[in-house]
Length: 342
Ligand SMILES: *Cc1c(COP(=O)(O)O)cnc(C)c1O
Figure: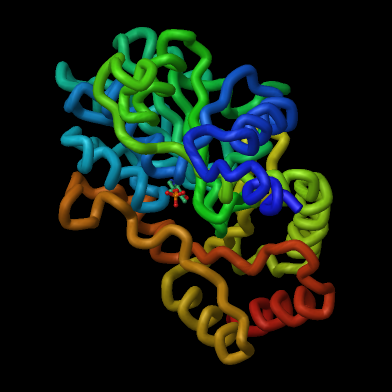
């Protein structure tokens, strides 16, 4: 039905009717005052770093998807890793200050698995040292913290609407900012810098979402409440049935309305993870090693050792979590895990 509108309009991209409608509906759904839809969740990171990173040192987390640190290197900035909190798995805010130098320009932190960073402390540090804050909120669709959308925090927040994410448009993403000035710069940056057809505000790139992708988003958005509710059922099942004397679950930050986007479990060691993964694979169940390896160990962004992130990355596994995952399958998954561990 949404796709038919695209054919009827004969308008395929450049912020057509469907993109504008999806922006309005997402503003309402997410309770945010501003959103710019984009072609994926990586270009908004690059735009944010281009605008605020100033080719400086960017304090960042080693525990995220590779796009977070790759965007830093791609924009000719330098990633400076700060280790993560062992339970929340977000950047350890108590270790940020000691990593700041005269070349630090920004902090780029990930609300990993939709779990909010310690945004108050990060904001206070940024203020004290005059740094910009960018949140990679790719996993954080629908999350609120202390009653506010998680996208309200930092100078810029970005999200991904990739097919594997909670809410998706096939490929797609979004960026959010509170300041009118930053909103303006984000906007023209994602549209080649255009100020009308013949003039330019500044440098830009093509970060626009197409009408076809917006059609997918408009089709998926009305299902989100039901999807999230059903994912909560799956998460509750795991919480009630996994044997937590042998593994650990993610600790969600206090005062968070979470989105049930991922169900990571942390094993005692990598050997146990591999054993469980093999057992599940034998039964045609395919969990994912999100996120491995720790980003500070990748050649092009090599940083100092990050003992907690490296340790967690080697023994964390995301269990199957999707709409309509049946109780029969859930029983099988939990039993296979529980009996595989000594
Ligand atoms: C998926 C993801 C991205 C990249 O988003 P794309 O839409 O795939 O470009 C960036 N950061 C994190 C943390 C992600 O999980």
